[in-house]
Length: 274
Ligand code: ATR
Image (spheres, helix red, strand yellow):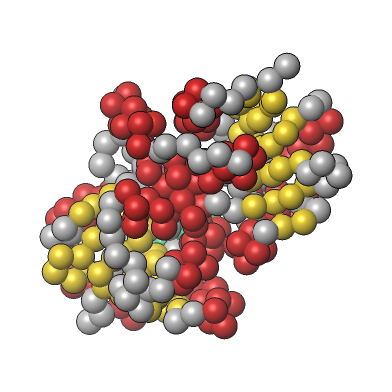
């Protein structure tokens, strides 16, 4: 019987993870099965326990369960610990559940390897102070950005979030209005504003000439923030599809010990987006 893996979330029918992991398995000649699990909003822990009791080997965890997965894990990677969220659960040979967070690695790989953005020395603005933002702060700091500013509609949340990471790098938090007159080489949108086709209210001058924007959301069309970037002269306006594939590749590596080639599936997903 092939090893069992799945992605759990609610809703889950839209998830591209089964297609991504099927491609990785094919490419690396691994025998595994990867399915979608609709998590019970009131019994996430029960669903996870049942999956692993039925010979499950690993789970990807998505909205809205990442914080619950963090709490459920018996042990956590340093990235997951700091992120306060787990997107990858693995059953260890001793039966304990290990929690990892591969989202931040996925973002950094997509930006630097797939697109060639030089994070080292860059002035980076991260918009949002929820779970999505929290998950990528440490990897961005470890990529040696010159400064990371976390800006949020509700300023106090950004200030508090940045303060937690201050011991490991140059990061500070503020409200959106405090961005007036500041300029950044890269603006990353980690807010959920795009879900209602909105963009955070940031000053137009925030993006330096030749600067890039990155929306952690992805869409078959341009996202609202990509359109903002194009309107405000971004040299590149990227969506989060590459991040999705890269975080999946990191999970695959944690589970199977092999690194798949991400380029073919990114091309495939762009081509089949409908
Ligand atoms: P997630 O886990 O996806 O990060 P979240 O924890 O609900 O979701 O956080 C959503 C983030 O998007 C928050 O930073 C939120 O700002 P507030 O803290 O002020 O609520 C931000 N956000 C949502 N809609 C927004 C909008 N229209 N403009 C600006 N920021 C928005």
